[in-house]
Image 1 (cartoon, one colour):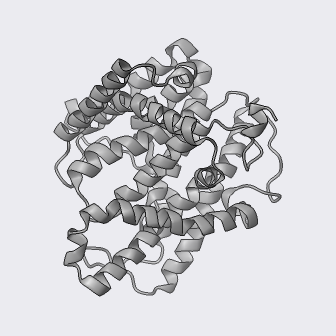
Image 2: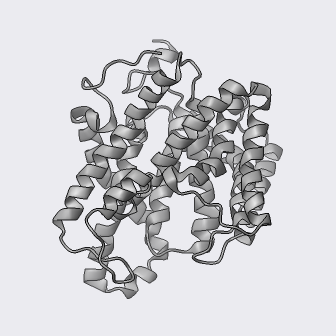
Image 3: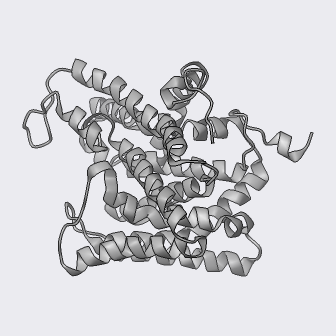
Length: 354
């Protein structure tokens, strides 16, 4: 059996195992980020910097310009993004309605139509808050599709970087809130350089790996410096600070090389694992269900040990995040093999034309 045949995945495609380990770690960090208690210095200066930029970079790395038309590409991405975005929203919205009266943290009632409005807006925070990422990715991919067709490949990454940093710099300079939440347009602009990085630097990324102790130390220093930059630029609670947005781009670019090298080192020793692949292929399932599982565990802790226990369980967060990952795995397996239509896959969806 050839090495290529050995790496044929459960989706029938050839995979690079290191990409799976990198995404597995990022899925874990997403769950960790949403697990209470919240610690801004750790969550916003370390965990946030490790999870979101890498997801977008990997998505850009996997992007292909083989599509013959925008209509074909739009159809493909609609199946892979908009279908799960809608199916999971409907599922959790029905459960939300069945719960009866709903109130916001400030005590006012939430009307039944508010989640529908949020779904159309691209941020269904009442029933599936983490899906902001899916809407953001869809917007980013539509933008990138047209940019890579009108901008020479040599200039694509610099232009994406200039647009992202320029947008946030202008907002900071004029001290104005230029945030556009419709389908997370501003977040798509903010993280666009990582998508372009993954697509435009495919060969350097594929070659990147630990080559010496000195290189490993250099990458570690860059990673530590990126955490310091994030920590120094943390915004005050409840405020959008554009300097923090610019810091995310710089700090993310500094820490990603070490992140990828570690992923490749782990993949080289563990090899391809079906369970890792199953989690990664069904990342949308984890994105959709994580907060419900975290909330269930949180309620159990409060029931047996009281509210004060939540604020004291900082060191238990990684264990809880791991429990959530394991608990969702059976649901991911069931959906993958028995309800793939929820993810825009399976016989209900015709084969794509490129």
